[in-house]
Image 1 (cartoon, one colour):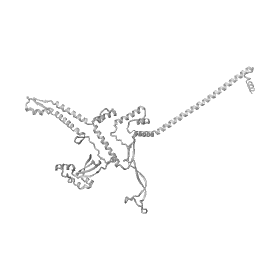
Image 2 (cartoon, rainbow, N blue to C red; image 1 turned 90 degrees about the vertical axis):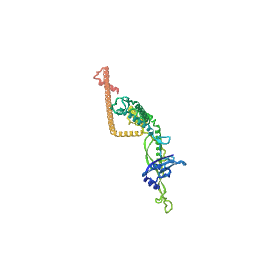
Image 3 (tube, rainbow, N blue to C red; image 1 turned 30 degrees about the vertical axis):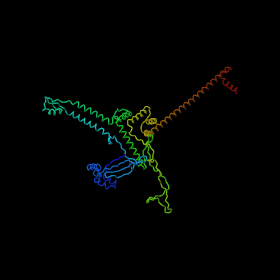
Image 4 (cartoon, one colour; image 1 turned 180 degrees about the vertical axis):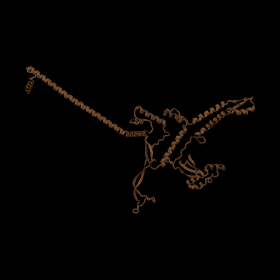
Length: 474
């Protein structure tokens, strides 16, 4: 099993890359040799394949060793092998691997790889042939020469028949070519239908259906349109997955410096994460002599000189050992589905009579299928805070006006209560006065009645009766 790639490289650059083979690469034309295995004609063809003026074809090949099962790497050209050894790349388990990922649309019975266009070449040739034949039939005409015309006028009739305003002599009649035209037209229609079935359908391209078509309905049509291209797309997706895995392996192997990457948590919130962060501690360690690279020796004690030093004891969030889930979306959610979810959210808010920025709408947004819900909620909170900051002076004025109106209402209420209490007291006093007057009238009447019974003058003896009553009472 092997995979590789070939590139045209200038011979001068190849000499810099491989100085130990500079003598062979100095003159590409003279350095080519086949060891006497090919004829001179075949040798010239092979030389043209490997060498072109001042450039050479440099091949990098990865292959699996039959004995060890490890992946090996070899770089060679027309002059032989330039570099050889184990592969420099490793997978997630630390095993040697091939860094090249590739896939083919189809492979024929001879092992040759080809793409979708090869299946269309024969059909396209047939389309071109039928269209050319129909154009020829349209621009030409067949004639039949009868016995009355004679052979001497056949050439003249042929020239006149090809003219739009030609005059055909007597005894010459055109031949009907409708059958030939219709036959070629039928074959042309069949070829066009066959090549259309190989191409993406209108449903797949999003051109089918009406403007008000829902996102789910359009998605179903696109899935139906993918039926013809299911196999190549499946191979392409598998190749993409293998490529992403290779990217992850290379990141684990070579991305060892401290850096910050963006991640997304389970709630869809974007965050930043520092990876490959060195964990440094201060420890007593030997002092390294920069001139020798060995521990420095104390001349008095003849012992390694010790001093506090910052030593890296580990790595926090080391990318090579982290356990994480990487989610890759092959296609972005269509705008139609996103717009449909947004329309549903706005319609619900309108029916419920709440603002899309209100806290009540946040719960509806949490239950919806809109992407980046946490990001949208964060933006909504920012807008709410900004709106509150802008409306703070107006709200303060309104609050002050409400407090003033409330104070006036309370003052009016207290004044009314005071008036009601004063009036109640006045009414009570008047009632007491009426009662006292009634008692006086009743008393006077009783005195007069007593005076009459005693034979006294009611008007003159009132005081006497009062005094007597008073003494008796005493």
